[in-house]
Length: 185
Picture 1 (cartoon, rainbow, N blue to C red):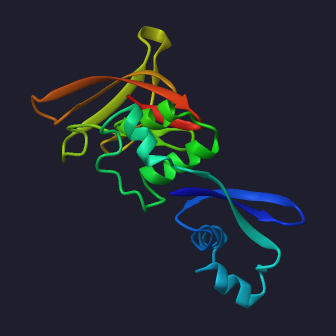
Picture 2: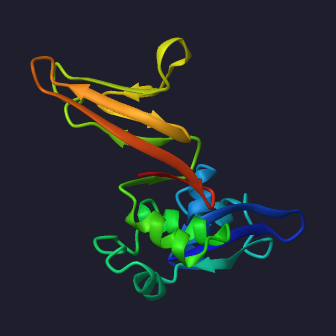
Picture 3: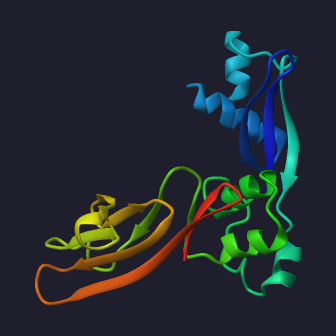
């Protein structure tokens, strides 16, 4: 998995896209702009293959990550740019060290953006409720939630859920920013 910078040769960088090859990166850019593929956008005349190019800026060093933290890449689909492989490619493009890449790979939850979505054990059940808080008393900050998933920002969080009857769960999560990627551990 690589991270490509899609650039307009006259104006500069248009975005960074994790992909397996330059064509897939250009297709991702075209899809973001509402086209089925880069070729379709070029046919319509909206994008020109001479003007918009994809340059590789980083690659995920899978084997080297395994030497730093054995087993950290186990179970990761190395070809899907929408999942952990894409997140690792973006972190590599942001200058992550091998140790940081291994940490992101091994983390239970990781995301690029303002929040990381963390699932709860009982919150998704029919009568279940999920919650997450930072702090105590009057200074408490509550996280946004969607069904049984809570969306956490950087910091220390207490995440809980119940099934609406007797079963309850409470877990502590630390969310930190590692090379432009939010990691919940």
